[in-house]
Image (cartoon, rainbow, N blue to C red; front, side, top):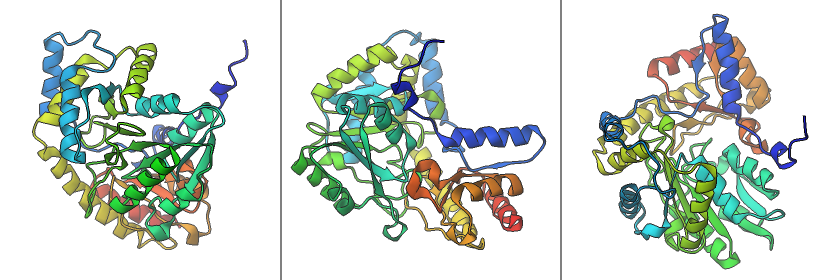
Length: 385
C-alpha cells in the first residue's frame, strides 16, 4: 500500500467514542453500564421540528441546495443572531453547515497557515487541537483552572500572544467543564484580538444552555464583520444531534471562501434538514426551557452526589450538561479512575485528559441521563472503592 500523507497522521479522534466502544463491549458480555460519556441530550427532537422535516421530504425538498444554505434558513439565522446576540448580520455573512464540526474545520482552514499559533483552552474540545495539528499550527494551551471556575482568563491569553498568534478559539458555555465566560472577560478577549490583529472563532453550540447566568459572545464587538466568527448549531438545545445542522456568521470575504470549501467537501447541507432548522428557530421555543429545567435538576443531583464520594469534589457548572469533578484525592490518575469506574462500577465517563493535559486529575460526566440513573451511578461508584 502507498504511504498515506503526513498530514493525515496529525489528525486525531475523540475519546468519547473510544470509551463508548469499551462500554458497549462490556454490555455485549452481559454487564449493565450507565452511560455518562457521550455529550448528547437525552430528549427527542421536538415534534414540531420533526413534522417540518417530514413535510419537507414530502414536498420533495430532497435535492441540492445552494452550498451556502437555503435563503429561508439564512434569514432565520439573521433573526436568531439579532435576538440572542444583539446585532443583525448581513445575509452574506451567514453560512449553513452540516453540523458544527465542519464550521470549526473550515473556519480554521480559512485562517491558519503552517507555523501560525492557535490559542485555545485546555481542557477543551478535542477538535480544536486536532485541526491545529493537521494544519501544521503550533498549539498554545490556556489552562482552565478550578479556582477560576474553569473560565478562560484573558490575562492568560495575553501572556501567550506572540507575533505568530493567528487565532484564539473561545468556547462558552464550555465542554468539558460547563464553565461560562463572563461578559467582561469576553470583552477583554475581544479587545486583545483587535489590538493584536488576531481572529476569534467563538464556538457557541451550548449558547442556550446556561444556569443562573447569561450567555455572551465575543463577536458582538465587530459583529463578525472583521475578525470574529460565530459558530452555533441545532444539535444540543434542539436535541438534533443526528440531523447534522449548524451555522456560521463570518466576515463576508471569509464566507465567500467557506462557500467554496462546502462545494468541494460536502456540496451542501441536506435540504429537508434545513427546513427543519427554519422551524426550530422560528417555531415554539418552550422545549428549550423545559429541557433546561430538567437539566438543572440533573445538574444539582449529580453535583451533590459526586461531592459525597470520598476523594471527589465538584463545582456546580454554569452551562452545558457536563460535571467535571476533581478526583485528585483518590490517588488515581484520570485514566485510572475512569477505568476503575467503568470496570468496577459499570459507569462510563471520560478522563479529563481526553480533553488535554490540563484535564489530569478530573473526570467528565455528561449528565444527560435519568435522575434515577444518576442516583444509581453515584451509589455504584461509592461502593466500588
